Picture 1 (cartoon, rainbow, N blue to C red):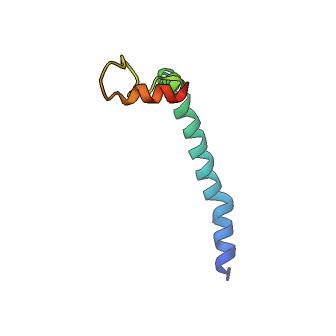
Picture 2 (picture 1 turned 90 degrees about the vertical axis):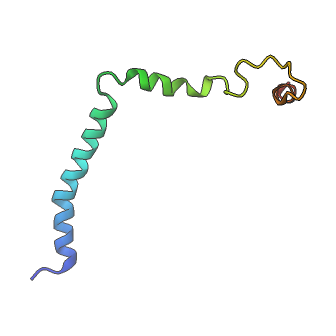
Length: 74
């Protein structure tokens, strides 16, 4: 009779390897599917977007926290 290690090793060498390969190919196909370019372009530009709390701020309010933030950056 086979011991537990040998049985698990045979399963890992065949079926688990096949399942991992299929999963990897599926992930690659999902990432490069048609129509996903806009999502990837949006994600790629995320670091360069202006933070929402500074967008459209005119620094005109009396207790403007954006003005203090901008002064700290200078």
